[in-house]
Length: 177
Image 1 (cartoon, rainbow, N blue to C red):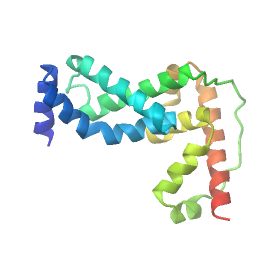
Image 2: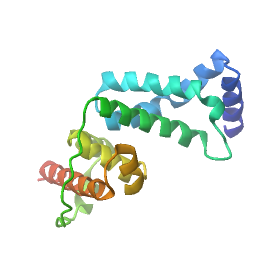
Image 3: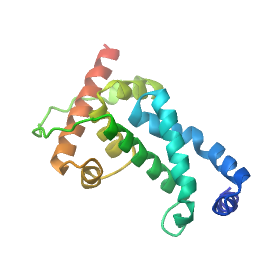
């Protein structure tokens, strides 16, 4: 598969339409869910996804397999386009104090949940909390990187993550009570 992908990418760099179609089909489902985690609306997700592939095909010559896997490269484009879309929707991150909130035991709750239930719960929290939760917990960005992407301080990122976790825990507790 790795060699096949290498050939598909090379063909895309030569602007071969069939290769672009193949690449699209290989990644569209996974990227749809990545974008949806941020955008949380199927109509806008489709629009952002279109922008992701447009940008990926336009800049595919810049892809360097020595620097990152293609999957990582295109997922980064998807995340950045999702954030850009959310910015246009005027999601505002106000500085909030960091709280030392009590950590509640969620292991029992999580063991009873299906993945779709957890994703639904995450999708129900407000955009600004969901975005930081996704960036940090799911996509593995540091608070410094999140701060740079969202133009906020590291402490604001940490505070929003703490609040996001609290909101998720509260919703999960209600589901299982």
